[in-house]
Image (cartoon, rainbow, N blue to C red; front, side, top):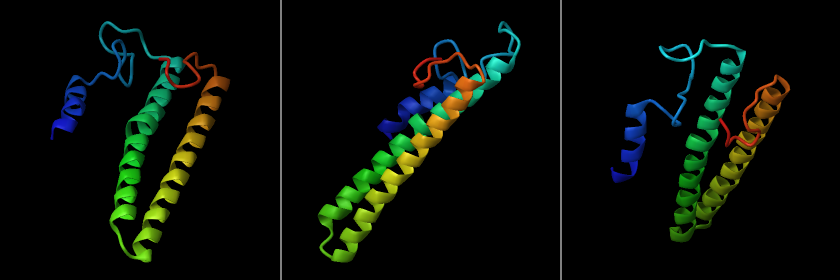
Length: 120
């Protein structure tokens, strides 16, 4: 329970960064939405899916497979653990490839955020 408390407080604020939320425009006191805001929405969504969901889930799967590999005595359990390792690595590679493709497309469309995902 203690591990999810930071996520709960982040969910309550509804703000990912200091200055922007998922959609950083159109609200009272903010600038109107434009095409760059739409690209920022796509960028924030992909960044959330990859860095905030996929990487922690992959870490949990690696830990589960490691425990399974160490504690099982049968060759069937070891094969299952190795398959989990392999599938997790393939899943992370697919997610990273999708992230690279989306960020390249966003760059071609003129998005001015950081290409490596640590900017806006």
